[in-house]
Length: 300
Image (cartoon, rainbow, N blue to C red):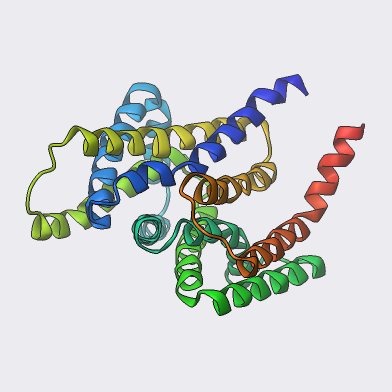
């Protein structure tokens, strides 16, 4: 068990870091969401390629060899998967930043509680993955919580579902790409995102920000809240199964809710609290077999 502790620690740290993402974003509230997105992507591009070229060149060569070895049809599929995933990821980043600074932190946090359930339902419909009865019941409870939340704040729940759906379908596409290194794929996606966003940036660009406050936060976002959590999650997957990491991911919205209420003093109504508790119960129910296996393993 001791040998796995460092991998579990890496998983917890990666998720915990994401839970505090709203703090640097809210500090940049005075700046337009698209400007934050532009410079986050541009800075992340530099950071991730420097990391790959310095530490992961052998994995890059391996992926290039694999891409050259597959058929023309398989290459086209890979290209379309990367392009589709890039569009979804870029839109997810933008909507998340916009929601944090213009809607509410709760809507952004709620999105990442809904996301795994949308991913599961999307996998059921698109990838034909099987869902047990208990998982279907949990999806029903999750839907009820979303409807309940919508009666309190329809705008918040719409943003939550949009953010969650964009990331969920991004994950579904990623799940189908089994033969490429995830970090290399992300680097290509960020490169494409820069190419996609560059015309918009040049068209809307007025002045280049020079303030230390802005750039210090952008660099923190790119390194601490983009590249480092990714490295930690990849490292965690060396020693723990992805399903265990999936359970740990739910720590993210819990921290995000705590930050929203305790740090930013966002008001949470009894109505919203009930909806969140319903969704949390759906999450536990959906992952009940895995939770039961973990506790069974710990008793042995």
